[in-house]
Length: 93
Image 1 (cartoon, rainbow, N blue to C red):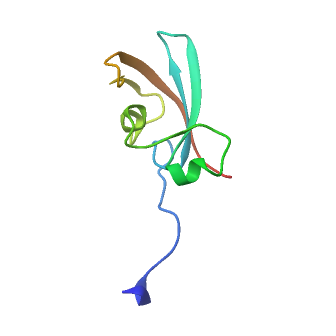
Image 2 (tube, helix red, strand yellow):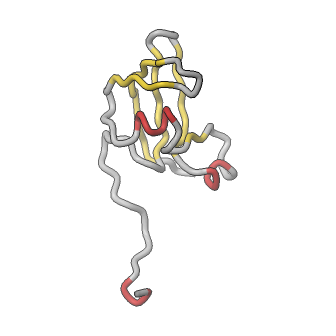
């Protein structure tokens, strides 16, 4: 199995949010913007930017969405937040 293994990074489709990207979202109802890395706890140890898991409420909401999409998601406290994806770029440490 290791004989044919390949190491690398997965292909990332431009304009689509995927794990390993720095994502900027706008909260239109709060007049606020936030930028974070969509990644894992392991990546959080090596960066100064906030890291959200793809399984977190906001991470799951933006994952596989296009830049420009408007999405609503429910927070752990039960509040519904509306966000607009402003940008998604490959994270370069």
